[in-house]
Length: 496
Ligand code: PHE
Image (cartoon, rainbow, N blue to C red; front, top):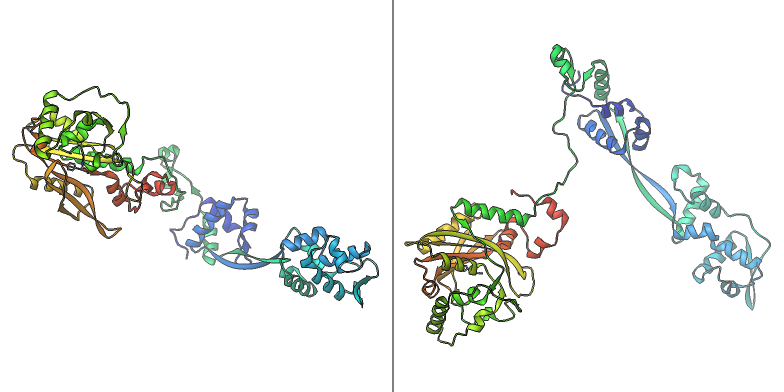
């Protein structure tokens, strides 16, 4: 009995029709017989094998081809033939032959030995070795076989016993013959295949439902060919956004979802907002040339309010006890973090309450390595309000990380000139099996908020997005995000 579930498509029918129970048909013959394309046959036989309608047998055939010295021997003559020709041209011994340059020193010994065993020459020694020949000999069996193989390949089945002995001789000579193996697939139809094929031809199948079949009600009387909805299809790679851009958007959505508002700021900032207003002393290491990119000849159009400048200057004098210089605060920098954006906003709006975030590029004059880039993206957020506490800061971190699927986190005390207390969050990188720092955070010091007349405490945090991307995509080198490795870009998935 046949399986009522098994249906055949056109390709399968055409393959089955050309197969036999006993005599195997090869892949190439199947192409000829069916006039189908290689890929159609390849796919068709896979389907048929899966349905147990055909058997596939793989055999390995050995073939022989000419190798480099074999090819030279066919075009320029086998070494012993070149020896004979040289002697016929008047050369009398090995050194004279070698001077002739038609034969190489590595070939001369074998050429003499072969010519001698072929009976083409006689060696005479009277003080000096002399080679004598009596005319041009007919082709040796080795020459004949080389000529037969040239430009094609032969299998052992094509060769007689004498040919096989000659082949053995040729195979012993370096790089005359090479053996190649070819896998051949042979197909036969199974009994089940025969039955299914027969049935498929007796019951006519409608390929698809038509308006006509529907309106006449004839659909009840016909049987439809089934569609295999699980059949493999070719992979296609449509254009898509870069994984890092996807992540940035995901982070943006996470903050919006938590009730935050996004703000934006300039890439070039004055040192005043990037450092001074953040209570970072003018001799701080981060401000040195090796950490910060200073921008030459950039004219700041919006200078801070003179009262604010005065307040910040006093805050530095009082807190750090040094002579604060306005010129240093006027130098423009490629922002080293996104905190000046937040701070400018706070200084301009002085909100009683706010939940704000910003995302953008920052720049650090660092050596590029597996964990450092000179440009990267930061995410930064603040919450200000009358009663906000450090607990709220840690709570919101947990909330945010869990939205990104990060559950294993801890907090560690650290230092920033502008926050007190200061913390850093650490998350567990399963890939590297260690804790890695993620965000810096803290409560802005009064030395930061008071000069700007910010009314309430501000919880602030920020850090690199590429760090999160490395975790998300299991990368051990941050540069991989920017090398445009096509296979990684194609295969990276949005959801894990
Ligand atoms: N600006 C810090 C950095 O770039 C992060 C930070 C933001 C720290 C806000 C404390 C408060 O690493």
